[in-house]
Image 1: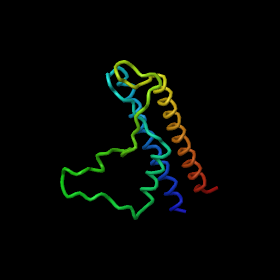
Image 2: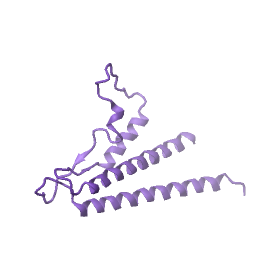
Image 3: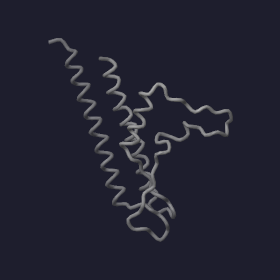
Image 4: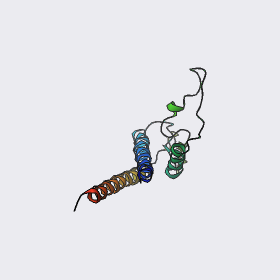
Length: 136
């Protein structure tokens, strides 16, 4: 029972962490809408979540060993690692900026709604567990 609960909580922990980090990435796009040559970034949420879950469940995963401070620091790659994608603009701008504000607002709102839905789902699950543990 505990391992099943731990697995379920790990999934939601990873998903919520990625949603929060994606929200920051999308807000960075909005903040730089007028910055010349800024390239809008995003992630493929499903594939990054799948990768994160496989890393946390795969105990045989080999870590990166470094012998010099000049080597790649895997922790410095952030939450997304190498999974940040650059958007191809539907209508290129003259200054090289690829931020489409309509698209950014839509993705920002969609991500926020999914984050809130995940929090609501978790709250309901904990409420159900608490009710199941109470004496009647």
